Image (cartoon, rainbow, N blue to C red):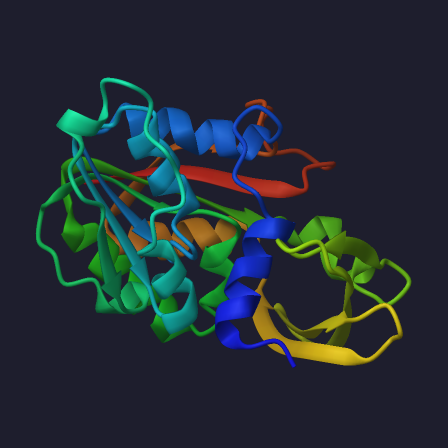
Length: 255
């Protein structure tokens, strides 16, 4: 069976941070590099912050993550800095906790939740507590950037065993991954991810619940928490949200 630490390493194989290949990564990278202090909520394995530091970010970078294995991998040194950056480098701070555990007060210019992490907040009170904590961590005028999958695209309908991904771990061992939806309850989708070896033996399962908020409901939560919407897009190229949008990309400001 694959351990938690090994699974965290596989996450980076399946979800590499690459600003040249992925418009979503480039979107967040631009925001991070323009901010003096950044809090990445649900930072996972820390790829975004490691990359920003490797590209010369000289301000404060903090990653907040509830999963111990993910946070442990984030705390490792996995990127090399270019010449001239090492002497100016400051350590990325890694903190254990969920979004609602953020305990900073007016310390950051930017907060982020990448990779659809906001959807892991499934209950109303969890969303409210998380937004309250994130807003408190931002300075006046600070911004919160994140994305959720637009429910109209019904992304979960593609999460089935017919859509298998073949890949290799960091050591070159072949593996397969796929998803299976377990339940759709109103706007919350519960599904299980599977990883197997080439023989079909399951070596890892992981159940996840995600909430698919529509635009009015999402914006109501933000307004209630003391945010104003700066920008909202339906795609990473800046296209407005429309009938074909698969994403709700939001940049909100503390007011």
